[in-house]
Length: 130
Image (cartoon, rainbow, N blue to C red; front, side):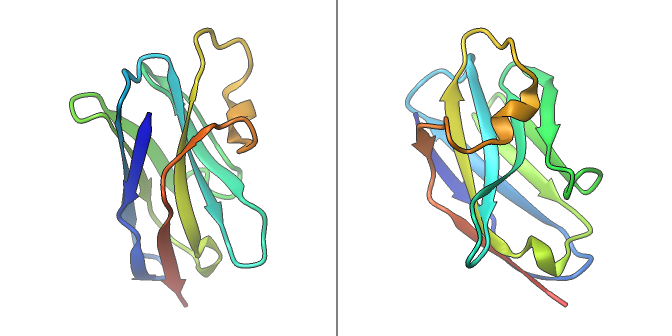
């Protein structure tokens, strides 16, 4: 599967942005899609993830709960990350990634770890000014 991320930009603190991740090359029915971010000098961290076909199967990092929402557009094979109440500490390059999971037997929070994801899109920069 190939992933194309977009939607980053410069926004003031308190503002909103919506990131999009378009997937192609395979049916996404058995995939988990995750959003990750990496700030300068920091490790890549999980932000949110969703199991395609089960929109209620999501997980969020504690730092973004209540502010970010991950959603799926099945028609366009796009996973969105709606980000609201943005803070300067949300500044980072954001990546989407995909992993094929035929049977999900672990909590979704496990998929906030970037390690197992084999397929990555290019990053999109989000800058939040104070």
